[in-house]
Amino acid sequence: MKHKLSLLLTIGALAFGGTAAGLVGAKSAQLTKATTTDTVVLRGKIGGVDYWSADYRTFTYNSTTSRFELTVYLSADDAFKVVDTTTSKWAGYHTDLGTSVVKGESGAIGDNIIALAAGNYTISVADFGNYGNASYVFQTATGSITYAVATTVTVTEYAVVDGAKETTAIGTKNTATTEDFTPGDVLRTGYSLDGWFTDEACTTAYVATKLTADTALYAKYTSLVDKKYVYFSAPSGWTGCYAYTFGGKQGLGAFPGTQTTLATHGAAYQGSGIYKVLFYGDANDTEIIFNNGTGGTKGTTQTYDLSLTENMFYKLVDTSTGDADRGLGAAVVYDINAARKAVTASSPILAESICGISKATATTLVGEYDALNSTAKSYVDAATDYVYDYTDTSKSTTVSFTAIIAQLRLIAASSTSPAAGITLDNNTTPVLVMVISLGVAALAAGGLWMSRRKER
Image (tube, rainbow, N blue to C red; front, top):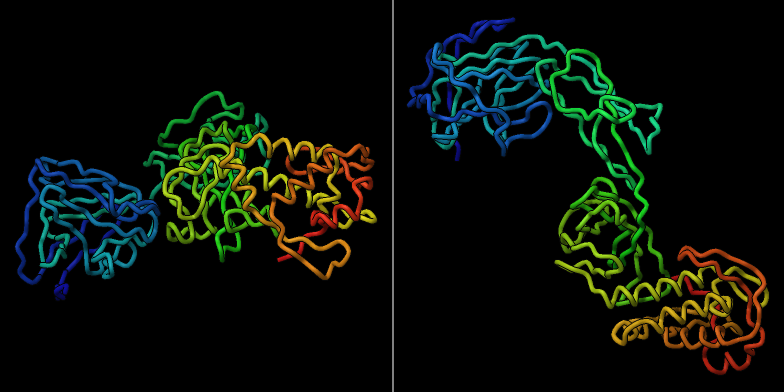
C-alpha cells in the first residue's frame, strides 16, 4: 500500500522565463543525485500521445548548472514524469506549481506534472527523491520548470487520389514552431497511402521538420485493383464481421478494417454461413484479423493474427493459417448460393429457385465442383440448404448439396435455351428461365425440385 505523504512546498510564481522556488519544510527523504553519466528521459502523455512505456525524449546534461535539461512542447493537460533510467527513479510534483502553468496530480499513474496550458516548457532536474513504494518527487530545490508561450502554425492536410487533389482537406492541425511535425497516416479502404508530399503533384516527399509558417501537405493515395477473396465461418452471436489486413499497406483501412456482410443465408457450410471477404493483393498485406468491430478478445470477438492467403477458409479459433481445401469448397457453395439468390420470380419459377438457374450458369457451377479434389468435394457434399417444396410452399426441407449438384447437372445437360439475363456478384452473367423440358414431375419425384429458400 502506497505511503501517504504530507509535504509543504513554498513555490515562487512562474512566469515567462521564471523558475520554481525551493522546497521548504518537506518531510525528510533520501535524495538520489543523478550523475553526469546517468540517462534521464521524459515519459508520459506528450503532445496528446501516450508515451508512458517509452522514452519520449532524453535530457541533456548542463555542466554549468549541474542539471539535466530539456525543452519540449506540451499540449494542455499533458501528464508526465522525468525518470532517471540508470537508477530507475521517477520524478514528479505532487503539489500545485501555479494555477496558470502546471499542477501536480495524484492518481493511478502517480504524482505527475500536468501542463495546464499548451506551450514550450524547459524542465531541469538534478536530484531524485524516494519516498517509498516507488513514489518519487521532483524536488523544486534542485530543479526548475520554465513556461513560455509557444508560437504555433497551422498545417492543412489534403488527399491526392490517383493524381487528383480533393477540394476538401482531410483536416487541419496546429503545431509548435519548436517541434518537428509529423502528419498522422489516414488509411483508406481500397487505397494505398504512398507518403506525404509538400506539393500537389506529389513529387517532393515531406520530411519531418520544424514548420515556421502555415503549411499545406499532401497525402498520396493510389487505388488498389488486385481483388482477391478469402472465406470466413460466421461465428454464432456476431451481428457483423470486419476484416483488417496488415503487414503491407493495410488495404482494408485502419482497425477494425472493412465491414462485410453475410453472403449466405439458408446454406450451412462447416456448421455456419459463409463470409466472402475481399482483400487487395497489390496492398501486399500478409496477415488478416476477422473481428466483430469491437476488437476485444482473441478467439471470442476477434480471430488471432492469421496468415493471409487467397481462397483460404478461416474459423474464429484458427491460430495461424487457413484451410485451402475448405476454402475451395466454400467458394463453390458460395457461388451456387449466389446463383440461386440472383434468380427472380418468373412464373412458374419462384424467386431464389435452383430450377431458375440458367443452363450456362449451371454448366459453370458443375464445372467448379468437378474441378475440386476429393477432400474439397466432401466438404461441399456435407453442406446443406433449406428449400421449399414447389408444390406446397408451406413445407420446407433440408437438402444436401449433393442433391443440388445433381439438379444442376440436369439443367446443364438440358437443350433448352434460356431467355432472360441476370447478373451475379461472382462475376458471371447467366440467364434466367426454368428449363421446362426437365419435367416437373420427374424432378419432384427425384427429390430435386427446389425453389425459394426459407429465411432462417
